[in-house]
Length: 330
Image (tube, rainbow, N blue to C red; front, side, top):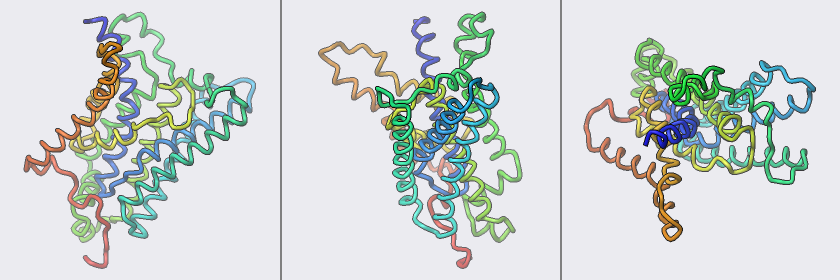
């Protein structure tokens, strides 16, 4: 049993880190009243932007600098994700377009954007397989603490991950502190609950919506970069993300819009996501694995039903979530 947990828990955590980034970013966005269903596309754009930056740097230098090997992909990732956030805000906040339609369109655009440039890079390297490997850059992202192996099970469970894993946890905890313990966080929650009242109190509603959505997209984009550079060991393949972006949005409901809860929830869902690999079925029952893959979504539906049945206000989404704000109607 212990050997099973030592093998399962680290893999569940690694699987859950992209979900943690996407969930944290979406929570911050939704706290402003914006419902961004484009998170899967944002993660895709963040990942391919980091891959492009890494590809250009790896092929443009004979000796890699560890700082630049990390800084360039991260900068490109954050820039690409920021542009997606700005596009979403321009359409939904400035032009007041429908948020659901805009988010779905951005998901389609982001996946197409990633596949186009990913396919172009694959053709440039003339690879025999439909993927591109950036192993040199990946080694810097996935490098764990040097003394982790010497600490036995403790080191394997808690210290054997790349720096982006710890950064994701730190961002989630910082986001929780910001939303619940700072004046700016209070203003942001006020914008999401009642923008009319917030505007009357002198809070710039559009500015908070822009800032929260762009920051949320940048955080979600880092989840895409982590998936490629750490989880996938620097290998980019088109359409390899699966449904992780959508699962991140589902996690927002599961965590009841609390970033600190998303840390453990993402690890839980990471474990549920790969649980089917550890359930013995036998060759005659292989079709049951498809049912086991549904477990994370079934859990989300159960939580959604339970949350809807409870009348506690703190368990409900922001009151103005998904609704455009018309200042002229105030």
